[in-house]
Image (cartoon, rainbow, N blue to C red; front, top):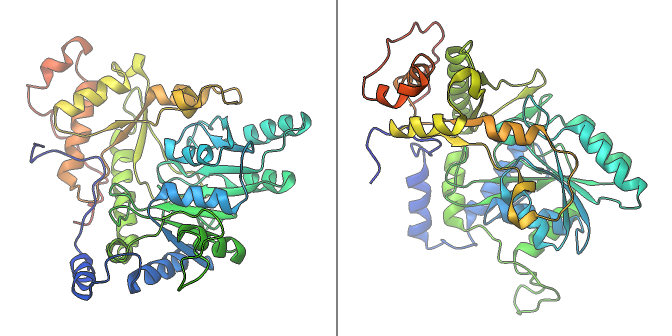
Length: 405
């Protein structure tokens, strides 16, 4: 059983119309893939992102798989993939029997490095291998630097699929993520900024892509009355029940983003200057949704590694997580090509994700920061003994934006 006073990493809150909309589904009997909430959810997501079409899916992984299929990715095709991302970004490439090619990240936001993309694609092209698509992940809510990525993609004829699963509401140079490439994909898993329990969404301005996606996700049924199917389809449809929950969450998305940004600002202001810790900030051209707040830990300077700090915080019922393991290091992807990867391996070892739940209070955030400062001011060999010594002195809070409760 989880302790009552734990500080969770990323949990949802339900304080809007969730009960009302879900009850309406139950009362009406429309709980499966038919019903008014699916279409409403799609329309509202399309409006938020600023695209013409949105197709709801059962989860974000299904959205990426569908995106690859509508982009024509098939057996043996090369798809460029950032190595520093969740495995769900690359698994759909394998579903298509295509070949992922893993790329390194840049060192500030940990997103795909456009220069390394260009270098790798140029080498592949010169060797007669032509990548057909590139997937970019807006990692932990921070958008990628999309202009140079799109320039490379357009030059070499690649379809750009945005994995925006962690970044709904984030913007690049004033434009919402999901509309910057050819296809965007979102996730509404329980730990995301808004949730439908499960659920995902494919968005695009291209009518032919949207039509194809809707066809494939509904079992490729060719006749509304007869059970006629001319090709293999997928049961990737979102249920009305899930869409109702997602729609209620979406109504508060801007409030949620404001809260996430306030949490990030708190960590940035109160951990700034702590030796051995770098709190990631957004690029000048970016508006991050800060799904999670990443920090880098220099073990030698700070005194503990990222994993040791994670363990230490866990002993205090504070949830944190390491960065995603770079995909090129995982067993399912051994043998697949990658460019020279250096930064992703380093930040994976140094990275830690701090609690960013929407329900966190100022007292919760202060507790997290105080425990980190406790480690920083305690000799390393006695840090675990210090866990029993109570809190360190409360520090001056010059900037302390309070999240909406």
